[in-house]
Length: 189
Length: 348
Image (cartoon, rainbow over all chains, first blue to last red; front, side):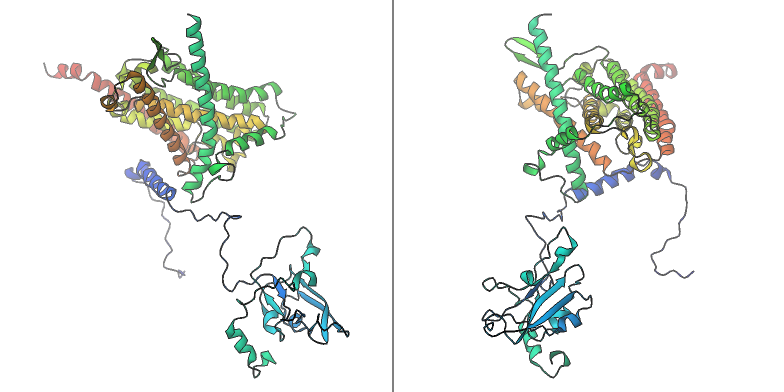
């Protein structure tokens, strides 16, 4: 048979030489190896005190952004739900009533917006699909929960607070903004 | 025998006992720490400063655990066995010379609890009884894995005690005494027995590993084949007793190896710098414990380096390698001691 790599070795059951039969040289060399590990720097990360550094493009829990006036940007167009490969996003649209202009930016808004965090694969397609710059993935981790139902995040968790804005400048870089301006791409229409 | 003598001996015994227990306790911590470091981990470091309270937490855990005694077991023997194991482990400490002697208030206080003139025999006798704790425990559990583990332990102990005994006979021939105290005293300065008996020392150390059931000779408790070996059915502090006995045995073995072959409390050139007898005695204790701690570390180092022997390899090593080697060592030692007589036969 053709070997797949040049690393394969034919196993031979050869008789051990006297030097090998004594065992002691092999034992000593083995103990030297373990001793060299004794003084090596340990790669352990002391978790609660230290945390592993996240990648710059880490995609964690979603946020629904508000605009500068504090009105929700989402218009419940449903493009994110369509783009979602895991079908994690559901929403119910509603019409804005007079007097709610401070709350919702456009005439239509999402009355219910739910992401099932157990289904979500954190691909970021919702973010790409969104024409209103409303949904972003952040560097926040999704917390563990005791019940499966608790993983269905509603607007109470997803929408950022008016006075507690979530920084998405890492995801909304100038390059991204520039790209989104080009209406000739089908993506941005 | 005066009351003062009695009190002094009592204090010394209690001190030796306490130190043995504390060292055994912290050996469990050291074992986990050493294992961690040898495997590029950190080991326990949460309980207290650098995890220094870990043994306390372990002890609390063991005491709090539910205690199970199998209904089909032999109840009396089942309870007796871990105690026997621990008792014999603690008994050996009395013949080890922990230092020379302290001169306090005009009286001389030896730092050896009792210098039996048959100290080595006593040591061997007690160590041999140690296997009963394992055997009784394994048998009383009424569990096939426990029984297999116990049988392995006893056959292993018997096999390696022969080689150990013969290597010690060679040592007794060169030192000319069975008293542990005298053996330690004879190795003053550079006259360590390892220089006289290097092969005997090697055999003794290997057999000590086997006698304490430490890796690579930990077949009596190998998890892969025998679940837990002789302590499969044990839980709570009874299990703790077995583990504790192993660490005490390790400590005592290191002490015995240091005393027999590595000069005990002696350290070369110390006498040139320190002249006060009491300071020298205390320094001797420090040196002995330094040697013992290195010995314990060596036990752990070997455990986390070398894989376990297969059972036939173990028996091969014991009967076909170590015993012939120890007999060779015995013959060579005898031949060297009688070299003038032998030579005079040929050279008239």
